[in-house]
Image 1 (cartoon, rainbow, N blue to C red):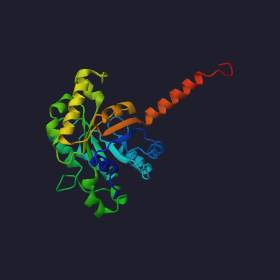
Image 2: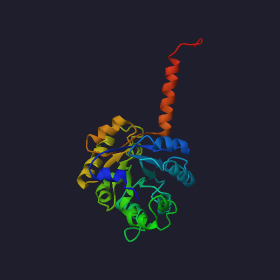
Image 3: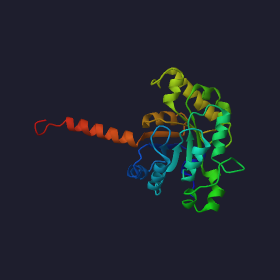
Image 4: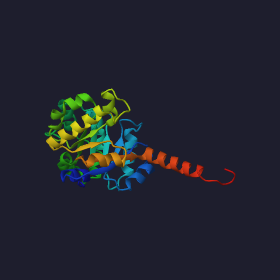
Length: 258
């Protein structure tokens, strides 16, 4: 079983940069996988991806150096079991708002006695050295991130961050801003204050801080302040931005009567 690249980086106190996948096309995933991001987040929360399509994406990413992380639709052990059995190297749990929810999330990723994950890794054992090696290493190797995205989670940070087995947090800026009454205004001072509070608590508990930053500039802003996990765009956004720029470049030209 290969070492979890992102987990190793975070333990050293260094920063990681990744991107997101939401398209069901395996060739698009293969292209993303060869770019060399530290990690790729396959999004099952806000995309139409099925578990069958997830398996196809994992196959396309087989040779990718990026750590394969899945954002599960919900904090549901049934979803977690299926995702990990297909070979995910980490899971992001959305909408974690309390220590109890965080404990449930962590437990669902680990085999007994550390947790309650059921045995049946139909694909994971085949790509990770066989059943014996996978069982021996999976608990320690799989990343567990809690997504902080509402004011209740901010109020319960000490409990969440003290959960054994939690490897880091990811802020969901859009939902966090909405929970404070500032939908689509992520720069509002109240939202920024909450994010700074989360960062400070993460540093106190020595839990890696991250967020769905979207842009390199925003990722850099938080990493320079002590964060360790940032995201840059995703497959759909990259395709759209390149197409928009190509259209602008074409419109700026004058040829064939244009």
